[in-house]
Amino acid sequence: MDMNPKQVADRARQLQDQVLPQLDEARQNLVDMNHRVVSFIRANPGTCLLGAVAVGFLVGRIASRR
Image (tube, rainbow, N blue to C red; front, top):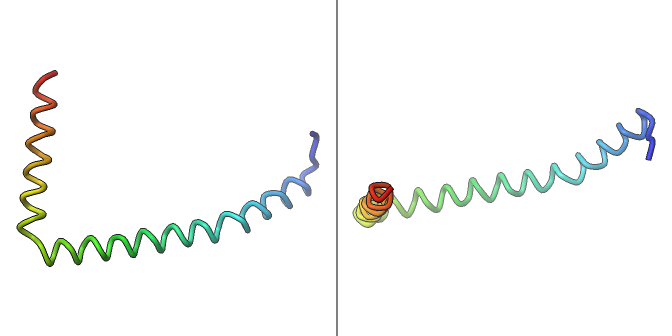
């Protein structure tokens, strides 16, 4: 499977054309998820604080066993 530089460049462009739309979609999904999480935290700060304390406690208990 010996390819010349032009074939390699063409293949790279094809891969880029396939991957870029997927990356853009993934980026947009992450932005949307971030907005939802921030909205939830602003609407429920106490719940989020209690959850963070609980997770911290569990991680501390697991880490102290080692």
